[in-house]
Length: 152
Image 1: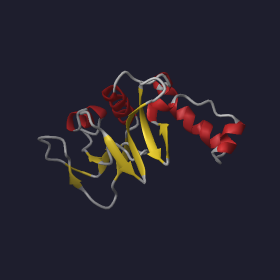
Image 2: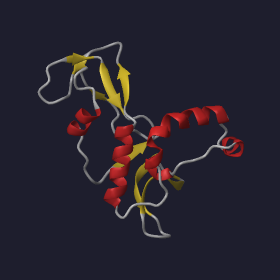
Image 3: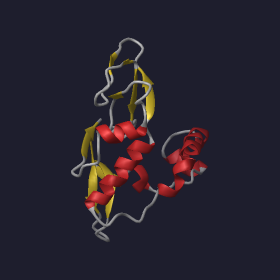
Image 4: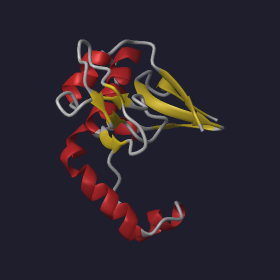
């Protein structure tokens, strides 16, 4: 199991969003920007072209990646919250329709937003076409401290 939460570094007492599974490593924007080389690709057993293609998708967020940590647990949690919002993906639920979860909306939908990877802070938020936005997810799931995720 993977246990994700903000953890304080022993070295400088700063905070990162991390995942723990035997060892602890920073994830999300706290992981820093990686420049993929053939040697690094070989270490993670993935084709360099695949890693570079994924990283191309991350270019708009490059400035948000960092390794300098945060002043507080809450700052690290907010960093992961922002990471999750920035990486929302639209999902089509082809086999069923559900009510939109936006407050006051009576529409039925087959679409949802989710934040994939690392357990996902927003696993599936069912929203109609009008409300299928980052702003709607922020309203439904406002930031709150004490974030912890457990995922496989």
